[in-house]
Image 1: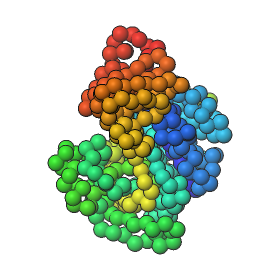
Image 2 (image 1 turned 135 degrees about the vertical axis):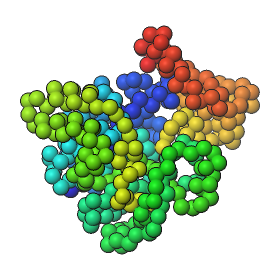
Image 3 (image 1 turned 180 degrees about the horizontal axis):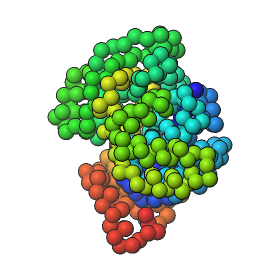
Length: 365
Protein backbone atom coordinates (compact mmCIF):
# COMPACT_ATOMS: atom_id res chain seq x y z
CA UNK A 1 0.00 0.00 0.00
CA UNK A 2 1.04 3.59 -0.59
CA UNK A 3 1.91 5.75 2.42
CA UNK A 4 2.45 9.51 2.25
CA UNK A 5 5.30 10.88 4.37
CA UNK A 6 5.36 14.65 4.73
CA UNK A 7 8.52 16.27 6.09
CA UNK A 8 7.45 19.37 8.03
CA UNK A 9 10.32 20.18 10.34
CA UNK A 10 11.95 23.16 8.63
CA UNK A 11 12.26 26.59 10.20
CA UNK A 12 11.84 28.80 7.12
CA UNK A 13 13.99 31.64 8.48
CA UNK A 14 14.04 33.39 5.10
CA UNK A 15 10.38 34.22 5.63
CA UNK A 16 10.91 36.17 8.85
CA UNK A 17 9.05 38.06 10.30
CA UNK A 18 6.00 36.02 9.21
CA UNK A 19 7.83 32.76 9.91
CA UNK A 20 8.68 32.09 13.55
CA UNK A 21 10.08 29.18 15.56
CA UNK A 22 6.60 27.92 16.44
CA UNK A 23 5.02 29.03 13.15
CA UNK A 24 7.50 28.19 10.39
CA UNK A 25 6.94 28.54 6.65
CA UNK A 26 4.97 25.31 6.23
CA UNK A 27 2.35 26.57 8.69
CA UNK A 28 1.81 29.84 6.80
CA UNK A 29 -0.72 30.58 4.06
CA UNK A 30 1.62 31.93 1.39
CA UNK A 31 -0.04 30.70 -1.78
CA UNK A 32 -3.75 30.76 -0.96
CA UNK A 33 -6.28 30.30 1.83
CA UNK A 34 -4.71 27.05 3.08
CA UNK A 35 -1.34 26.82 4.76
CA UNK A 36 1.48 25.12 2.88
CA UNK A 37 1.07 21.99 5.02
CA UNK A 38 -2.69 21.87 4.55
CA UNK A 39 -2.24 22.22 0.79
CA UNK A 40 0.25 19.35 0.78
CA UNK A 41 -2.25 17.07 2.51
CA UNK A 42 -5.21 18.19 0.40
CA UNK A 43 -3.53 17.40 -2.90
CA UNK A 44 -3.22 13.74 -1.91
CA UNK A 45 -6.99 13.49 -2.36
CA UNK A 46 -8.35 9.96 -2.04
CA UNK A 47 -5.11 8.39 -3.27
CA UNK A 48 -3.74 8.05 0.28
CA UNK A 49 -6.29 7.91 3.15
CA UNK A 50 -5.52 9.73 6.39
CA UNK A 51 -4.56 6.55 8.26
CA UNK A 52 -1.64 6.18 5.81
CA UNK A 53 -0.53 9.81 5.99
CA UNK A 54 2.34 10.62 8.35
CA UNK A 55 3.87 13.95 9.33
CA UNK A 56 7.48 14.13 10.53
CA UNK A 57 8.07 17.42 12.32
CA UNK A 58 9.89 19.13 15.15
CA UNK A 59 8.62 17.96 18.53
CA UNK A 60 7.77 21.56 19.45
CA UNK A 61 5.46 21.80 16.42
CA UNK A 62 3.34 18.69 17.04
CA UNK A 63 0.44 20.59 18.64
CA UNK A 64 0.45 23.28 15.93
CA UNK A 65 0.41 20.62 13.20
CA UNK A 66 -2.42 18.77 14.95
CA UNK A 67 -4.42 22.00 15.14
CA UNK A 68 -4.07 22.53 11.39
CA UNK A 69 -4.87 18.88 10.55
CA UNK A 70 -7.66 17.86 12.95
CA UNK A 71 -8.66 14.81 10.89
CA UNK A 72 -5.20 13.24 10.99
CA UNK A 73 -4.77 10.52 13.66
CA UNK A 74 -2.63 11.83 16.51
CA UNK A 75 -0.22 8.90 16.27
CA UNK A 76 0.52 9.89 12.66
CA UNK A 77 2.18 13.15 13.75
CA UNK A 78 5.71 12.19 14.73
CA UNK A 79 7.79 14.68 16.69
CA UNK A 80 11.53 14.38 16.13
CA UNK A 81 13.52 15.00 19.33
CA UNK A 82 15.94 17.26 17.43
CA UNK A 83 16.85 18.36 13.92
CA UNK A 84 19.01 15.80 12.13
CA UNK A 85 18.43 16.48 8.39
CA UNK A 86 16.48 14.35 5.92
CA UNK A 87 18.27 10.98 6.02
CA UNK A 88 17.49 10.26 9.70
CA UNK A 89 13.98 11.71 9.27
CA UNK A 90 13.27 9.38 6.35
CA UNK A 91 14.88 6.43 8.12
CA UNK A 92 12.60 6.92 11.12
CA UNK A 93 9.54 7.19 8.86
CA UNK A 94 10.56 4.04 6.99
CA UNK A 95 10.90 2.11 10.25
CA UNK A 96 7.42 3.21 11.32
CA UNK A 97 5.90 2.33 7.94
CA UNK A 98 7.59 -1.08 7.86
CA UNK A 99 6.25 -1.84 11.34
CA UNK A 100 2.70 -1.14 10.17
CA UNK A 101 2.99 -2.48 6.62
CA UNK A 102 6.02 -4.71 5.84
CA UNK A 103 5.54 -4.23 2.07
CA UNK A 104 4.62 -0.56 2.33
CA UNK A 105 5.57 1.94 -0.37
CA UNK A 106 6.44 5.47 0.75
CA UNK A 107 5.87 8.72 -1.14
CA UNK A 108 8.13 11.18 0.69
CA UNK A 109 7.61 14.89 0.10
CA UNK A 110 8.35 18.27 1.68
CA UNK A 111 5.48 20.22 3.20
CA UNK A 112 6.30 23.60 1.66
CA UNK A 113 5.97 23.16 -2.10
CA UNK A 114 3.33 24.65 -4.37
CA UNK A 115 2.01 22.02 -6.79
CA UNK A 116 -0.79 22.25 -9.35
CA UNK A 117 -2.88 20.39 -10.43
CA UNK A 118 -4.03 17.87 -7.85
CA UNK A 119 -5.29 15.40 -10.47
CA UNK A 120 -1.98 15.35 -12.33
CA UNK A 121 -0.05 15.08 -9.08
CA UNK A 122 -2.07 12.06 -8.03
CA UNK A 123 -1.65 10.48 -11.48
CA UNK A 124 2.11 10.93 -11.17
CA UNK A 125 2.18 9.35 -7.72
CA UNK A 126 0.06 6.43 -8.91
CA UNK A 127 2.43 5.81 -11.83
CA UNK A 128 5.43 6.01 -9.50
CA UNK A 129 3.83 3.50 -7.17
CA UNK A 130 3.34 1.04 -10.01
CA UNK A 131 6.95 1.49 -11.13
CA UNK A 132 7.95 0.35 -7.64
CA UNK A 133 5.55 -2.59 -7.77
CA UNK A 134 7.15 -3.68 -11.07
CA UNK A 135 10.66 -3.42 -9.60
CA UNK A 136 10.77 -3.19 -5.78
CA UNK A 137 14.44 -2.18 -5.81
CA UNK A 138 13.70 1.02 -7.73
CA UNK A 139 13.73 4.49 -6.33
CA UNK A 140 11.52 6.94 -8.21
CA UNK A 141 11.72 10.70 -8.07
CA UNK A 142 10.06 13.57 -9.92
CA UNK A 143 12.09 15.88 -12.12
CA UNK A 144 10.77 19.35 -12.90
CA UNK A 145 11.45 20.67 -16.39
CA UNK A 146 13.35 23.92 -15.71
CA UNK A 147 11.88 27.19 -16.93
CA UNK A 148 14.93 29.31 -16.12
CA UNK A 149 18.56 28.87 -15.06
CA UNK A 150 17.94 28.47 -11.32
CA UNK A 151 20.94 28.50 -9.01
CA UNK A 152 18.89 27.65 -5.90
CA UNK A 153 17.77 24.14 -6.93
CA UNK A 154 19.60 20.84 -7.22
CA UNK A 155 19.43 19.14 -10.63
CA UNK A 156 18.85 15.64 -12.03
CA UNK A 157 20.60 14.60 -15.23
CA UNK A 158 18.37 12.20 -17.09
CA UNK A 159 19.56 9.16 -19.04
CA UNK A 160 17.72 6.75 -21.30
CA UNK A 161 13.96 6.73 -21.56
CA UNK A 162 12.23 3.76 -19.99
CA UNK A 163 8.98 2.11 -20.94
CA UNK A 164 6.80 0.33 -18.41
CA UNK A 165 3.19 -0.88 -18.11
CA UNK A 166 2.67 1.61 -15.28
CA UNK A 167 3.32 4.49 -17.65
CA UNK A 168 1.22 3.06 -20.45
CA UNK A 169 -1.76 2.63 -18.13
CA UNK A 170 -1.49 6.07 -16.59
CA UNK A 171 -4.31 8.53 -17.15
CA UNK A 172 -1.78 11.34 -17.60
CA UNK A 173 0.90 11.68 -20.25
CA UNK A 174 3.90 10.53 -18.27
CA UNK A 175 7.50 10.00 -19.34
CA UNK A 176 10.23 8.40 -17.25
CA UNK A 177 14.00 8.17 -17.59
CA UNK A 178 16.94 6.51 -15.95
CA UNK A 179 18.83 8.92 -13.71
CA UNK A 180 22.38 9.48 -14.89
CA UNK A 181 23.45 11.73 -12.01
CA UNK A 182 22.36 14.15 -9.32
CA UNK A 183 23.98 17.58 -9.32
CA UNK A 184 24.31 20.07 -6.49
CA UNK A 185 23.09 23.66 -6.75
CA UNK A 186 25.11 25.17 -9.64
CA UNK A 187 26.59 28.57 -10.30
CA UNK A 188 24.92 30.81 -12.87
CA UNK A 189 26.98 29.66 -15.86
CA UNK A 190 26.49 25.97 -15.07
CA UNK A 191 22.76 26.46 -14.48
CA UNK A 192 22.45 28.02 -17.93
CA UNK A 193 24.32 25.07 -19.45
CA UNK A 194 21.90 22.68 -17.74
CA UNK A 195 18.94 24.63 -19.09
CA UNK A 196 20.33 24.77 -22.62
CA UNK A 197 21.09 21.04 -22.72
CA UNK A 198 17.46 20.00 -22.30
CA UNK A 199 18.54 16.89 -20.37
CA UNK A 200 18.44 18.26 -16.82
CA UNK A 201 15.55 18.60 -14.42
CA UNK A 202 15.17 20.47 -11.18
CA UNK A 203 15.24 18.03 -8.29
CA UNK A 204 11.78 18.20 -6.70
CA UNK A 205 12.83 16.44 -3.50
CA UNK A 206 9.87 14.05 -3.84
CA UNK A 207 10.81 10.36 -3.64
CA UNK A 208 8.92 7.06 -3.88
CA UNK A 209 10.34 3.74 -2.66
CA UNK A 210 9.55 0.69 -0.60
CA UNK A 211 10.29 1.16 3.09
CA UNK A 212 12.52 -1.92 3.00
CA UNK A 213 14.45 -0.55 0.00
CA UNK A 214 15.38 2.73 1.65
CA UNK A 215 16.26 1.01 4.93
CA UNK A 216 18.55 -1.39 3.05
CA UNK A 217 20.13 1.56 1.24
CA UNK A 218 20.74 3.37 4.52
CA UNK A 219 22.24 0.21 6.00
CA UNK A 220 24.64 -0.09 3.05
CA UNK A 221 25.60 3.56 2.64
CA UNK A 222 25.38 5.08 6.14
CA UNK A 223 25.51 2.16 8.59
CA UNK A 224 26.22 4.54 11.47
CA UNK A 225 22.79 6.13 10.92
CA UNK A 226 21.05 2.81 10.25
CA UNK A 227 22.23 1.33 13.56
CA UNK A 228 20.40 4.05 15.49
CA UNK A 229 17.29 3.69 13.31
CA UNK A 230 17.33 -0.08 13.85
CA UNK A 231 17.40 0.40 17.63
CA UNK A 232 14.39 2.69 17.35
CA UNK A 233 12.60 0.20 15.08
CA UNK A 234 13.05 -2.61 17.60
CA UNK A 235 11.36 -0.51 20.28
CA UNK A 236 8.27 0.49 18.28
CA UNK A 237 5.13 -0.56 20.11
CA UNK A 238 6.91 -1.00 23.45
CA UNK A 239 6.84 1.11 26.59
CA UNK A 240 10.47 2.08 25.91
CA UNK A 241 9.80 3.58 22.47
CA UNK A 242 9.81 7.25 23.49
CA UNK A 243 12.97 6.98 25.57
CA UNK A 244 14.74 4.96 22.86
CA UNK A 245 13.67 7.47 20.21
CA UNK A 246 15.04 10.31 22.32
CA UNK A 247 18.37 8.59 22.95
CA UNK A 248 19.04 7.08 19.55
CA UNK A 249 17.76 9.86 17.30
CA UNK A 250 19.69 12.49 19.25
CA UNK A 251 22.86 10.44 18.85
CA UNK A 252 22.66 10.47 15.05
CA UNK A 253 25.00 12.69 13.07
CA UNK A 254 22.58 14.01 10.47
CA UNK A 255 22.99 14.27 6.72
CA UNK A 256 20.73 14.68 3.70
CA UNK A 257 19.09 11.76 1.91
CA UNK A 258 20.62 13.01 -1.35
CA UNK A 259 24.13 12.67 0.02
CA UNK A 260 23.46 9.50 2.03
CA UNK A 261 21.67 7.50 -0.69
CA UNK A 262 20.52 9.18 -3.88
CA UNK A 263 23.89 10.22 -5.33
CA UNK A 264 25.21 6.67 -5.20
CA UNK A 265 22.13 4.49 -5.73
CA UNK A 266 22.19 2.64 -9.05
CA UNK A 267 18.49 2.04 -9.77
CA UNK A 268 16.86 5.47 -9.80
CA UNK A 269 14.15 6.54 -12.22
CA UNK A 270 12.89 10.08 -12.66
CA UNK A 271 9.39 10.87 -13.88
CA UNK A 272 9.08 14.14 -15.74
CA UNK A 273 6.54 15.81 -13.49
CA UNK A 274 3.10 16.08 -15.13
CA UNK A 275 2.26 18.89 -12.68
CA UNK A 276 3.52 22.42 -12.10
CA UNK A 277 5.83 22.88 -9.12
CA UNK A 278 7.44 25.65 -7.16
CA UNK A 279 9.66 25.67 -4.10
CA UNK A 280 9.02 28.82 -2.13
CA UNK A 281 12.49 29.66 -0.92
CA UNK A 282 12.23 33.37 -0.17
CA UNK A 283 9.96 36.40 -0.24
CA UNK A 284 10.77 37.09 -3.88
CA UNK A 285 9.29 33.73 -4.88
CA UNK A 286 5.83 35.15 -4.11
CA UNK A 287 6.04 37.05 -7.39
CA UNK A 288 5.71 33.68 -9.19
CA UNK A 289 2.44 32.92 -7.39
CA UNK A 290 0.67 36.25 -7.21
CA UNK A 291 -0.03 38.41 -10.26
CA UNK A 292 2.02 41.63 -10.00
CA UNK A 293 0.24 44.96 -10.45
CA UNK A 294 0.89 47.31 -13.36
CA UNK A 295 4.05 48.55 -11.65
CA UNK A 296 5.31 45.00 -11.07
CA UNK A 297 4.64 45.15 -7.34
CA UNK A 298 3.66 41.81 -5.78
CA UNK A 299 1.11 42.61 -3.07
CA UNK A 300 -0.35 40.28 -0.44
CA UNK A 301 -2.51 42.51 1.75
CA UNK A 302 -3.22 46.22 1.39
CA UNK A 303 -0.84 48.58 -0.38
CA UNK A 304 -1.02 52.22 -1.44
CA UNK A 305 1.66 53.01 -4.00
CA UNK A 306 2.93 56.31 -5.30
CA UNK A 307 5.62 55.90 -7.95
CA UNK A 308 6.79 52.58 -6.47
CA UNK A 309 7.72 49.57 -8.56
CA UNK A 310 9.13 46.05 -8.36
CA UNK A 311 8.39 45.66 -4.66
CA UNK A 312 7.22 42.70 -2.58
CA UNK A 313 4.60 43.98 -0.12
CA UNK A 314 3.09 41.66 2.52
CA UNK A 315 0.72 42.65 5.31
CA UNK A 316 -0.72 40.02 7.63
CA UNK A 317 -3.56 42.10 9.10
CA UNK A 318 -5.99 44.85 8.16
CA UNK A 319 -3.05 47.19 7.79
CA UNK A 320 -2.20 49.36 4.79
CA UNK A 321 1.42 49.74 3.70
CA UNK A 322 2.10 52.96 1.79
CA UNK A 323 5.21 53.46 -0.31
CA UNK A 324 6.47 56.54 -2.12
CA UNK A 325 9.07 56.54 -4.88
CA UNK A 326 10.76 53.27 -3.92
CA UNK A 327 11.86 50.39 -6.11
CA UNK A 328 12.75 46.74 -5.56
CA UNK A 329 12.04 46.63 -1.84
CA UNK A 330 10.72 43.81 0.34
CA UNK A 331 8.31 45.13 2.99
CA UNK A 332 6.67 42.63 5.34
CA UNK A 333 4.46 43.75 8.22
CA UNK A 334 3.31 41.57 11.14
CA UNK A 335 1.72 42.50 14.47
CA UNK A 336 5.06 42.79 16.26
CA UNK A 337 7.76 43.21 13.61
CA UNK A 338 8.34 44.80 10.21
CA UNK A 339 10.99 43.91 7.65
CA UNK A 340 12.27 46.42 5.09
CA UNK A 341 15.07 45.29 2.79
CA UNK A 342 16.25 45.69 -0.81
CA UNK A 343 15.42 42.60 -2.86
CA UNK A 344 19.06 41.96 -3.69
CA UNK A 345 19.83 41.54 0.03
CA UNK A 346 17.06 39.10 0.95
CA UNK A 347 19.57 36.33 1.77
CA UNK A 348 20.56 38.45 4.76
CA UNK A 349 17.16 37.97 6.41
CA UNK A 350 18.74 34.99 8.17
CA UNK A 351 21.22 37.40 9.73
CA UNK A 352 18.29 39.19 11.36
CA UNK A 353 17.13 35.91 12.90
CA UNK A 354 20.65 35.23 14.15
CA UNK A 355 20.96 38.71 15.62
CA UNK A 356 17.61 38.39 17.40
CA UNK A 357 18.90 35.23 19.06
CA UNK A 358 22.13 36.95 20.11
CA UNK A 359 20.14 39.85 21.56
CA UNK A 360 17.90 37.36 23.41
CA UNK A 361 14.76 38.71 21.74
CA UNK A 362 13.12 35.30 21.91
CA UNK A 363 9.60 36.68 21.45
CA UNK A 364 10.55 37.66 17.89
CA UNK A 365 11.98 34.26 16.92
